[in-house]
Image (spheres, rainbow, N blue to C red):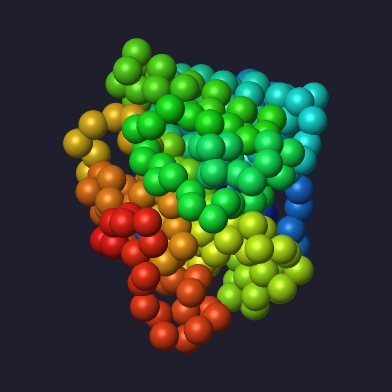
Length: 268
């Protein structure tokens, strides 16, 4: 049995991570309390506390961050940059096997936005984005995720730590996806349908990132559903960690579940 620590365990992705790993011994950490979850209060900016928290842990799923794409630099630099550095230092000091870092689609989204000031939009003909292409952050939040991916590269290559940079899409229930699209204009709806990550696929992605045998490190993986409107490529992720998403945002609206394979992207 693998001992897995999850930071940010009370968040939406954190709850799916808990559900994704029932066969593992979990240690849950969060900055905020949740009555139904037994978590340890935790500040990722406290390096000594981070080191102590990871004693006896094999794998860290590091989800804790300020997740707001509209946040200014001062609001994200502490938890998202210093906190990520602390995560890797704590992993190194405790001789962990792997860190799964919660990156984001916002690390690579700027090339396809309709305007630099509208990050959660997608143009009519988006360019495919593959994991090995240069980052294109669309916000300060996205910049912090690029820095986090770079930090993972450093610790993987310098110290031999297994690292999975998991670029997480937009985790929404089917009903919340319908609501989000109803409230948005065309570019906003295209973004939502491209970036949708169903709860079930979120669990699949996290399970794969924690348990897959890695042929190389670090690995950058795209965690979205198998959306017909996607522009984040899934082929490389499927090959690297064995993630095979089953859901499609198109099926939420038209019910046929078909994959239109937009823009010639892969359909693993």
